[in-house]
Length: 255
Image (tube, rainbow, N blue to C red; front, top):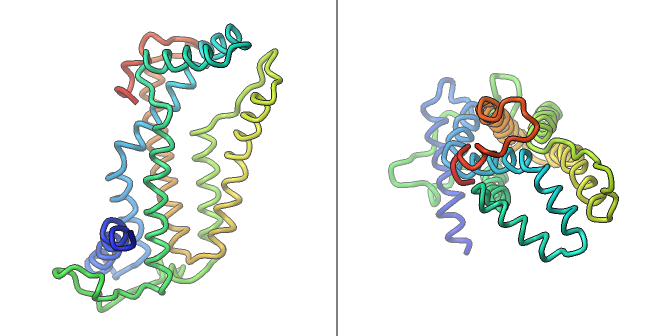
């Protein structure tokens, strides 16, 4: 398992970082991290795009989902069946977001492993055509040492995470009659995801090198821009109507 993990995640990131540091201006490790992060984001973009489209589609289907819930409130099996039929009708895969999360977790751990040893380019993990960079400028833009801990980068990571979560997970409005344990739990989880997650990112960022926080900040900014573009496209399709499900299945393809 360790061999496959190194082969698929750790070594590509380490070698990519080595090449970028070697050829980017000023051999800036921070710039290398940003470029590497953007490359990773573009590679997993098909998955993250599906996840974003799914969230927007599900938001638009909330009135129909609420109707199914009220109609079959005493029959959870029928409620689940009708919900899945609605998802299928509009080409929605509810596990798309979970898949995206699982893809990103090993990448984050691989980056942590890259920075754990203080960025040492062990020849044993470098490809035959890659050599360790002779010059490494660890200070991002001459200001922040990405191999060391800092306060600035965790704050930026937390702030961008908060804004990204605010876009991706809008508040759940309490509807009349929705006061069950399940409803309250859903609203509680919604609040926790939007507010607790940024604090979690901040405190984790304090414990790790600034390079990890820079990676997370870049990921968040990319996600914010992507979300804004997708939502703008969705706005053109749906208009300002509260309920318009006619075009949902065609928007973004099958999510």
